[in-house]
Length: 145
Image 1 (cartoon, rainbow, N blue to C red):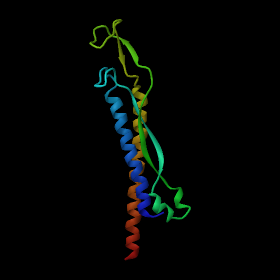
Image 2: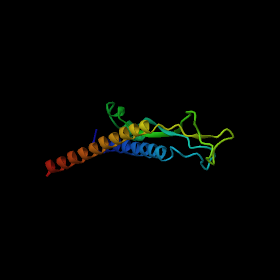
Image 3: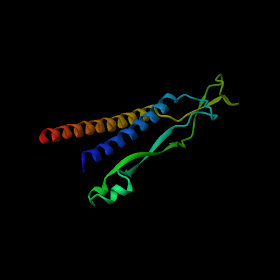
């Protein structure tokens, strides 16, 4: 594995974790949103990630069998959660139904914050990987001098 392949793997994870953090932040920001442009309350979203090959098909054929197992990560889809909405009795609310209940998104703040911290730790780990790759590359250049 060369430096650029290692950098590509870390970069793919950085991009995926950034998207994940953005989705989680959107969930936190819309925890009390009862009306969206699509109609109805906000629906919690989650990212679906998958391992992807690091290289294009041509360069994959030019590598050794060991290198072919290398994978990066990519967000494949942003899914809408199917959890039922929370009904809260607020008869004075403009979005209350005939019985006085308002439908709120079922967003658990503790769960979202835990997800955010996990995504942040993953992002930080990949930043550390990038920094380590850069340091190794610089050391290799020094040796070559």
